[in-house]
Image: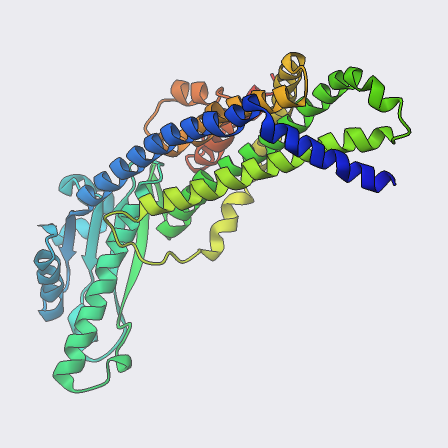
Amino acid sequence: MVFIMFWVFVGKELKSIARDPKIIIAMFIVPLIIIIIFYAIIGYGLQQQITQAIKEGGSVALINLDNDLYSYRFISFLRDIGVEIKLLDPILSTNITKALEVANTKILYVIPKGFSENITRFSPTSIKIYIRLGSLTIGESSIVDLATRLVERFNDNITATIALEKGIPAEFIRGAITKESYAFIYNKVVSNPYILTTFLTLSGFFIPLIVLMLIMMASQLIVTSIAVEKEEKMFETLLSLPINRMSIIGAKLLVSILISIIYMSIYGLALFSYIFQVIGIGIDIGDIEMPYTFSLFILQRDLAITLILNSIGLAALMLMISLILGIFAEDVRTAQALIGNIIGPLVILAYMPMFIDISGMGQAYRALLSLIPIANTVFISKLAIINDIIAMYIAGLSNIA
């Protein structure tokens, strides 16, 4: 009997929400307006960064230590596809930082001595790729992909050419040219740029989503619980009936949880599908291999401590905000409306760090950004890359303070 009445009240609450115009506006109209504006901002920002990355990737520097047939073919291959090449003095191969400064490019190829001879003898050889990453934004991953993709395409091209000239199967010499990639960022050298760019991409997408999911769930439950307590005064007639009190309260809590899950699903799926669609505009970056050393970033001691402190502070901050919202929530429906209307600003705060380059900022500016609630949770991972321990702990403790 108790179980049957529970589901009766679940149905009643769902029908009441569907008939209430205030809830329809709060659940659909307001979020729709917010999400359109947000996606327009995100889409414009991503396209601008990708366009800039493609523009910067259209000019590369090259040091030719081989000076033989296939090194010249590589140069011709790049020029044929429209890449501007700046040939540098071979002596600069001993000072890559200076070479990148002299060329004023973000990509430098170094063709080692014996490159052509190794290809002729069907021995493995490589092209070294040096990439200067000027910022810690999501657009930097396009630079890395462009630089490595050019070498991969040349390898495919030269493999097919040699196979045709020699009359041998292409599989026999496939993968003859490998790539050694290095990235320079904030006076540091990263031996595999995919580690850094993948970390930035994943942290830019998933950390904000996780933060938003936790905030939305916690806020929904807290505000709704307070609203339920207020709404109980209206249930004197119902409570006087032989119906289990927990059936009424439990039904309202269940509906609140269901609405929260729907919100998370809609925003998360729509966000990922839209952003990844925008990333693919105008550039073929191919498949990105997940680096096995990605976990090394997560295991940093200071990063783990500051993320834990920040999460605790964020939970406390959202508890206070939810309690304040609960004061204005006269009933469960009003609570849902209040939560629905604050989602937009929270999303903007969470994804704002995706487009902000902190590597070139001074200590004071990074410390200031570390004080912004929700956004500082995402900034922590970027601060860990440039090893700004002070700003990391400011971000970790700011929500608690």
